[in-house]
Image 1: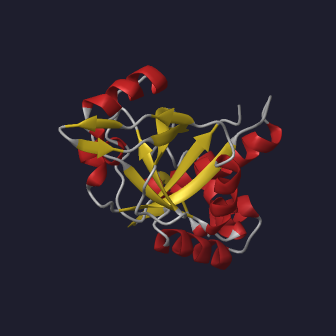
Image 2: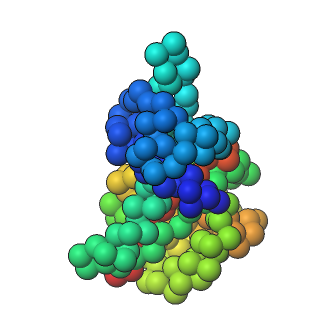
Length: 222
């Protein structure tokens, strides 16, 4: 969890243009922006760098700071929270989790045509063969209980080559404006704090994700 002071500093860096590319600053200039001493501002920068939320390049004329993908994800989560509070027609839920490795089963099941036919008809997209697995943060585990009560879509099971494949349920969602869906098989080997995401795109490659990276999932409430 990001310290409120560090989050405030990250927002200030983003307003300076840190999400678009390296921005020049000094501890003194950042301190003036945040109404902090240069020493405190320097500690904030070091803390953000240690969390991999920013990259810093120290040069003779000062330091150049860029907000990393992890830092952007923290800001996106904050943005989504404010949208829920102040957005016009605010609603929906936000789930945040860290990327984890899967069991490798998703790739096989997503390749089965009877499932793919239903995904195309019910979700409007054909999923990439594989799932993105997220371990939810402690705060999102309570939100997931509310998400579980929404109107999910049923994916029917079938029999193929004398083998029975079970049903599942899916719920549309978005990750950074990419259409996705949470999928819950009828029988799952994952604990309650892990969700599986399907999407028409290879999310790990598309979003440059590695294990441990934070991802925000937006779910509409209606």
